[in-house]
Image (cartoon, rainbow, N blue to C red; front, side, top):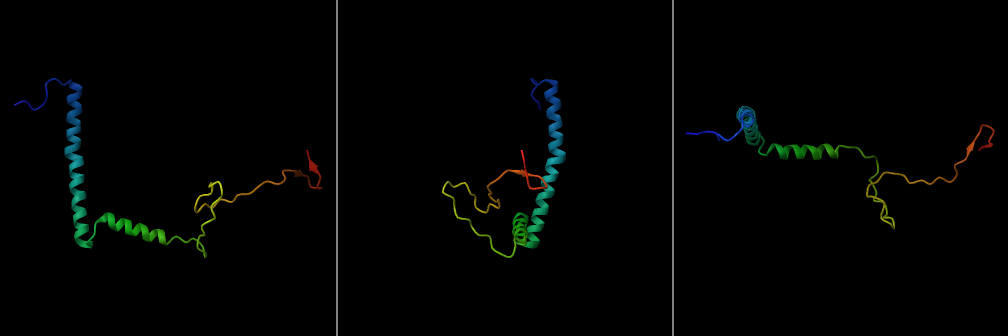
Amino acid sequence: MIIANRNMTPGMVVLLVILAILFAFIVVPVLIIGGFCWLVCQAITGSSPAELYLRNKARRHTRNYEGPFERETPPQDADGTSADGDDTIECEVISARTLDENGREIH
């Protein structure tokens, strides 16, 4: 009985053996242990670990303090450049003069 294809180069055979060892001794046990932990968690809590994580994530998000006032939705600009919930402040420079300590303009 021929187990491996004899047309492969020695480098390919070594690569195939390394991948088989990696898969057999690392990936499969990790998947088995992870599946066992998943089943134990589901048997104890009645819900999957992913559901518990998402529920805790939502609870952590609601604990973030956003100030005493609710966030208002700003009115939409005519050109539509303002994003919802954008905290940036738009300001315009009226004068860009530099004054010295005597109040005279420096050129």
